[in-house]
Length: 130
Image 1 (cartoon, rainbow, N blue to C red):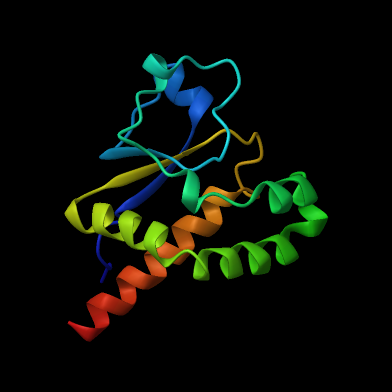
Image 2 (image 1 turned 30 degrees about the vertical axis):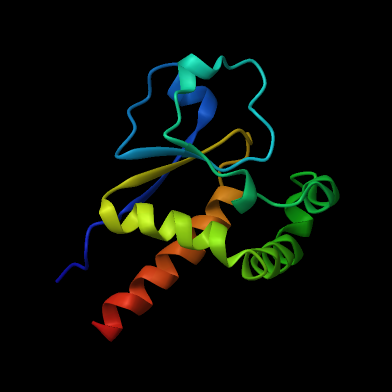
């Protein structure tokens, strides 16, 4: 038996610019606009800057996989301090599929992965409560 279909997808912004398909609403989840991409080429439905890691955390992490576990902890802590940003994204997810767009080259160690897991966890909790 399979669970509900995933509602939250991830896509690297540069792949979307180059024509990769996107499911549902497009949400850019980086604090900075991705380098080398025109706004018209990415065309996000929402730029969720407030849901992105702080500049300090982003600089500290530097996409170093050795810092991943601590980055996840700190970023989750930041998200807990910004409930409005998380709720805005949850509301969008409740309406249908969402693709979180990010610029990082590392597809396994980036803020969109953490944010997807936070959002999916919250949605799962809501489904359990009914």
